[in-house]
Amino acid sequence: MRDHSVRLRLEEAEHFLSSHAVRSKESVGRNVSEPECPLRTAFQRDRDRIVHCKAFRRIKHKTQVFIAPVGDHFVTRLTHTLEVSQIARTIARSLNLNEDLVEAISLGHDMGHTPFGHVGESELGRLHGDGFRHNIQSLRLVDQVEKNGKGLNLTYEVRQGILHHSKPRGDFLNVDLVEGLSLEAQIIRVSDVIAYLNHDLADAHRAGILTECDIPTEIQSILGVGHSSRINTMVSDIVGYSTELMESGTGPVAIGMSKTVRDAMNALREFMFKNVYGPEDVGDEGKSARRIISALHDYFSNNPDQIPAEYNVRSESPKMAVIDYISGMTDRYAIRLAEELYPGIADVFNKRLM
Image (cartoon, rainbow, N blue to C red; front, top):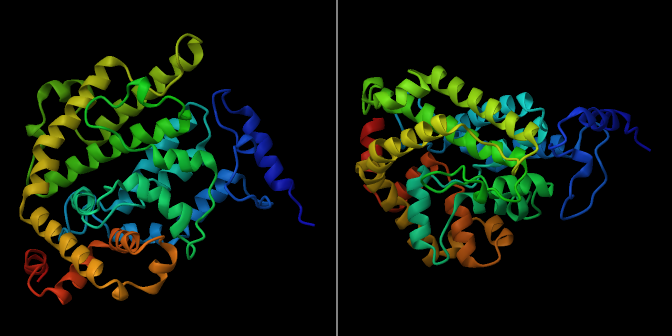
């Protein structure tokens, strides 16, 4: 019989968390019951399962915003994930919420992304009759694709956080949009935005698309000038505002921001949609990425026998096998495979990488 004293001590330490925190021993549980780990809480175990899975490994070669960039310092989907985790853990620790739960959700939230980021997601959604959303695919991966179709069997709380991290354009901090979500899951939603706004701005500077001077002065006057200043303003505001909500006992408890900082963040987000995200979608790289996704989808839909057998075992239909296979590809693998099947289709990327 294994000694569970280490896990029990860790669970007991969670007694000192905020009354609004989710405690691991109070988890709703897993879809399939299994013995507890003697050394880790349920959420720590989920974190480790995510870090060791194949889907997590692949995001190091997936686009964040700029597709197949040449420079060494552009953000990838993996470095984005790590930045989300760092910001989210800082907020959770400051609010005395469950840092392990926040870490597990943050590390798993983007594993369902396609090659070429949101451009690939949009194109695969157009081709797939039922649409495609990366957050839904992230949950699908951990539920039924990883571990040869067995899934990772994560806790309900981590799965819900992964599923609901995605946000609409506009003001996403409306409390109606987070009803029923744990505060830890809400932290991921806002940490995701803080991370991508700031590192995508840095990448836009690096790519020569924007300079710091292009950011409207009314946004800079509130959020600050520069990467670290903006992050510090947003995180500090969230901690201060959310602490007041948690301690006031009036109204719904939620992760929020003051109206001033919230409006500035939303304005910066809209600025990025207009000046970075939209142009990247319709530029040469975006158009080429869409052609590659479309060509791969057509080829494997017509040649399902060319899909690795493991995907046909994991997926409930040939149609989903195509989606699971393509969405799991890294940028470089998708480019190389498409070029082998349709020579010249990836010239935009090949010429740049020569």
